[in-house]
Image (cartoon, rainbow, N blue to C red):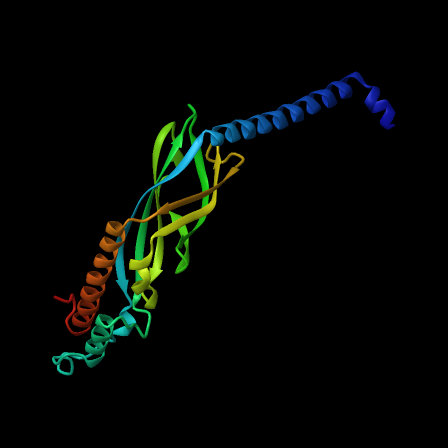
Length: 227
């Protein structure tokens, strides 16, 4: 019975068309994959700058108290500030949000969709942190700005920041020729020295933000809205 079907002109034509469609779809997917890979070979990721976006103090360190019992300075706050000035942090105070500006130069005439971005940033030997993409989802022809972010714990390691002089970002960025197309991975490894000025600016801002954050959270526990 099977041999009769195959020998039928109508069935043979149907099988031939189905086979050709399968080949065409497969060929199209392969072509898109090759094209995306070719574009990636002309794409270059580079570091631009690192900065402090914000500091978030853990509010649980300053439980709310009644106004009448909180008019005098909170001993916990005083001790925390005194220890901090001596370079001591007994409990994690919160997180510092670091922003890393990257540039991606697409040397082709085609646009790529960024489908995923997975990377880690290492600050000398102090700490390795996961990095996530903040906004951009497209790599247009020419130079593109990419903003990535990470969170640095406000613990004893922040006092090591002034010694950091080198960092690297290692990861994988996956792109496609359209929003729901097949993805192609691009491994990258960006290393760069950090200047004294960059790190001093970050450390100065972190220190000021921590002190202000502690005071504001303490006052906020007394009076809604803080100062």
